[in-house]
Image 1 (tube, helix red, strand yellow):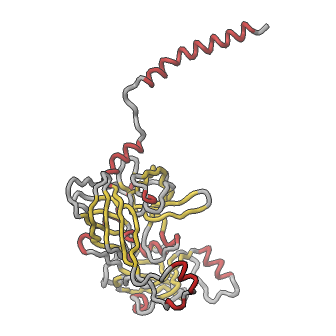
Image 2: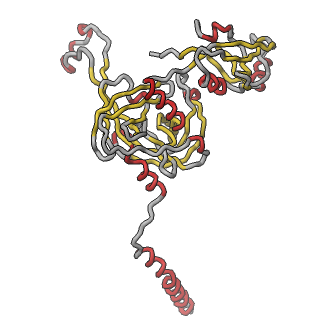
Image 3: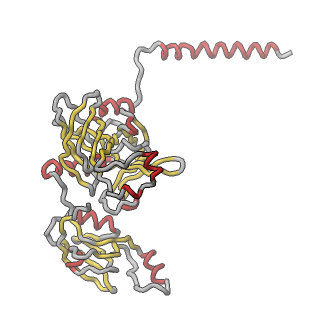
Length: 371
C-alpha cells in the first residue's frame, strides 16, 4: 500500500505552508501599501491637466429650400437657416502659475468661446493668446488666476526608445484618464503620416491616445511633461499615438506669448528623398526622362510660383546636397536648416544640376498662412 508515502507528502506540504505563512502574514499586516511609479507620476502632474470645451460658429452653404422633397420637409421640418453653433472638446496642460495653458491648435481653431475645467472641477473662461498651425500648438490664458499648479516640464531630448510614456487627458469626455505605454520611436516626421502642411518630428508611443486627449500631456516616469498629445493613427489590433516634443512646444509657446503668432521661414519647394540606390534604379529604367545623380540629398519635385526658390533660380530635378556649409542627406535635414534660418537673410545652398555643382543664395520669406 502507498498510504504511508501519501501521508508523508501531505505532512511535507503542511510543513512547507507553515514555513511560508509568516511571510504572507507580514504582507497582509503591513500598514503601508506601495503604489506603482505610474501612480506617483500621475500624482505629480494631474493637478495641471485641464479639460477644454469650445464653441464655434459654423456657416452653412445657402441652398434653395424649394428643391427639398415635400415628403422630407414634412418628416424633417423646415431646413435650418443661418449659422449654427458647433461644440468641441480637448485637453490641455497648465505650464505656469499665471494661467497659461498649452494645447493643440486644432482644439481651439476659429472658436468663439473657450471654457476650461480644472482638475479640481473649478471652471474658468479662457482666451486664445495665439495659435501655430504649422506645429499644431496653441496657448490659452485663463481668467482665473488663483491657486493654479503648473506641470513640471521635462527635457524631450533626454528620451530614448523604450522609455516609459504616460498619457493623460479627457478622451471622449472622460476626465482624468491615464494610459501607459512606452516611447516607440523618436523623430517621426509628420509628413510621413500624410500631413504635408506641418513641420514636426513627433514622439511615437503605444500609450492609448483617443479623441479628446488632444492637447493633454505625455509624461515620463517622474511625472514630467515630455510631449503634447496631438494625434492617433488606428490600425488592425492597435493604435499609434503621437506627441509634440515639449522642447519644441516651449519654444513655440514663448513666441506665441511674445507675439501672438509664430513666423516660419520657407523656400517654396516640394522635396522628396533621394539616395544612391533609388537613383541607380531610376537611371536603369530605359523610359526615364532624366538621369539622377547617384547620391543622397533632397530632390526638388516642384517649385512654387513667385516663391523665394523660384526667385533664386531653383528648378525641378535639382538635388540639394548642402545648406549653410552642412551636408543635406534628406528633405527633413533641409527643412530643419530652413526652420532655423532668418527671414531676409541669405541662405546658401549647393545643388547638383546636370552633374554640375551650383551654388545659390536664397532669401527665405515668411510662410504664408494657409486658410
